[in-house]
Length: 301
Image 1 (cartoon, one colour):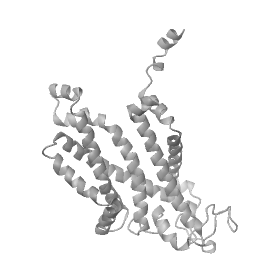
Image 2 (cartoon, helix red, strand yellow):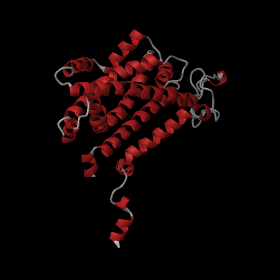
Image 3 (cartoon, helix red, strand yellow):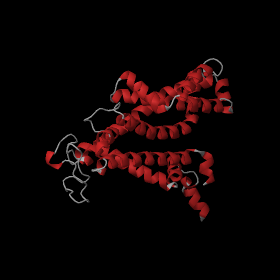
Image 4 (cartoon, helix red, strand yellow):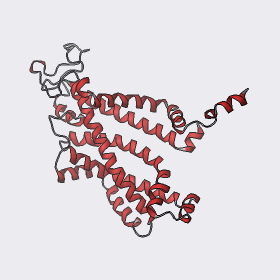
């Protein structure tokens, strides 16, 4: 009976890679919780004009520093209260998720792509290009990441695009080092030797033969860099070097509200809590990706 079932359903023995990945990912309950939270943030970011109850820049002068609805003096019109200019805090948090996710995604892509390319060059040419590339990366790693980002933004000027560039430059060395280490570990394997003997050219060896087998640690690193990018963007915004007001951005909201922390705690606490939960959710997702993509961890469970 069991043999017949197995023959009738080969997928029971050979599950699809996507199904196998999800089963390994779903074993980590924290990763699933982080994924659900980030899906909520993504939904709010995509549909912010329709989800937000008010325009994020609209000022209600008669409701300055109104507390959240569950506190005494709260107003049902403003579920999370208002800020020092009478703007709805919930609407600004929802619209701020757009910028935070945009900065995180853009900076990861801008550092991942050149980082992979430089890492491949360093791995395939370990005696010519490798030392020069790695020494430059070592110099960048010797500087504190936030200090380097502040220096870049100070040179380029504050703004959204310059913030993305600064965070991408700061994240670049980790991708270069990780890619180079993974490539040098793969170059001695039999399938690479077979591809060389079959006449594969250098571009094919780099991008088709070797790179796909190095992507698992890079995907995990990209997810962790995404959370770091959100933190760095909030830090630059808090210092006044990131996205400029009145544009709603979580770090900028913290900076503009810090003078009211004693008499209107929600103006500071709610943006800070949003940053905390978002970064925690992304890190939990990174742990789940590591568990699902690492064969050793996957087989150990």
